[in-house]
Amino acid sequence: MNSVTKRGSARTASRMAGSEAPADGLRFEGVSKVFATAEGSKPFLAVHDVNLDVAAGRFVCLIGPSGSGKSTLLNMTAGLFNPTRGTVYHDGRPVVEVNTRVGYITQQDNLLPWRTLEDNVAIALEIRGYSRAQRKQLVAETIEMVGLAGFEKHYPSQLSGGMRKRATLARTLIYSPDTLLLDEPFGALDAMLKNALQTELLRLWERDRKTVLFVTHDLDEAILLADEIVVFGTNPGRIIHIETVNFERPRSLTDIRRTPEFTEVWERLWALIENNK
Ligand code: ADP
Ligand code: MG
Image (tube, rainbow, N blue to C red; front, side, top):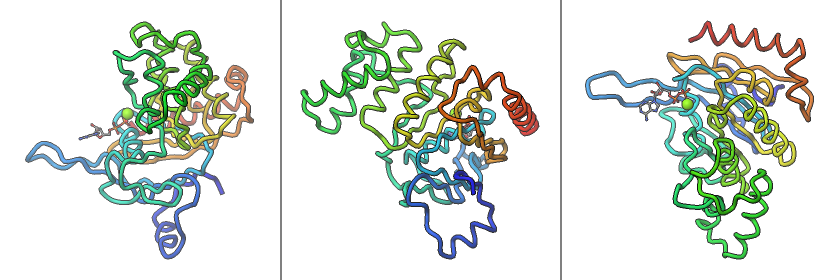
């Protein structure tokens, strides 16, 4: 069975009779989210009945048109708000409050402009009460890991777009969350830079094999990075397809792009997304 499995309602019913949420990874069980809207208008169904298992250590991309509920799903995984119906499980336990085990990189990079790179990267350690000496060592290692050594004293405004993305990644990786939620992290970057950062992200991931939920609207990116691609449709936001991607790892992104398999998957998923806008 796939490690990412879309579970139909019939199977959900039988599983609810006894089976437990998996011990490792994420499970979305009948997850829906309704937002209240302006007084007088109807409540808005943003996410409808998402059933999905993500085994620990998998790299899963979420793709779909704008408004299909992808960010809402990440917000619920991070415990920023609860589903209206259903449950998100992390390692078998329901997520009911802020989920400190995930590292969440939202669409905006949120670096603090008045702090240097090293002080931005240190934030999570400060919150967790690490001593100055402990922070110094870890900050240096993490900045090195994302390729920003030499820029420790720079402010965000003195960093390029790509460097800011690396800084955001460092700020999250430093506290070793077991799961990463990345919401269109490379969305606004040019193609060359995007390619470089995708390669580096894969290199880091191959090393630690964290669980990754990676939202993108770039189909190339999803096929290049993912073990599984979860395709969302709109009205309401919901899963319409799950694709397993079988390119071997470690991957060479330039080689994969040239294969007939890449084109075949790309065309099929593109048609699916276009027809479900
Ligand atoms: P995506 O990330 O796939 O573009 P979102 O999860 O951001 O989609 O949003 C899904 C839908 O839910 C959108 O129509 C959006 O306007 C709506 N939505 C998201 N957050 C809220 C909120 N806090 N209040 C009301 N509506 C919201
Ligand atoms: Mg979004």
